[in-house]
Length: 108
Image (tube, rainbow, N blue to C red; front, side, top):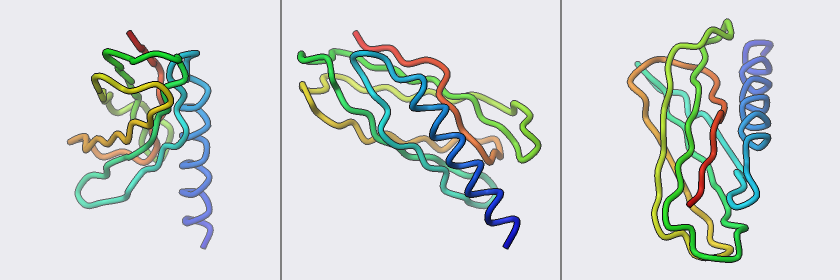
């Protein structure tokens, strides 16, 4: 039970870190790690709040193990996100990780 609570806490912290990295044009609304074997994946949503079409969007992520060590990075990209549109992103990094945090959000 404690292990599940720690994992859930780590997921919430990872999502909060992602939302803190939203920018004025693209806001990360959710971020969830999907545990898997041998590696996990993650999914999320970002909303276009720019009031115009975002021609290209890039979100970069840090991946952490259960001890909080950085074990890798991931990147997601999308094109032509309509005003107020929601981008549903996903990534399946090849490195094992338990927590994900966005560290850079760009919208052009």
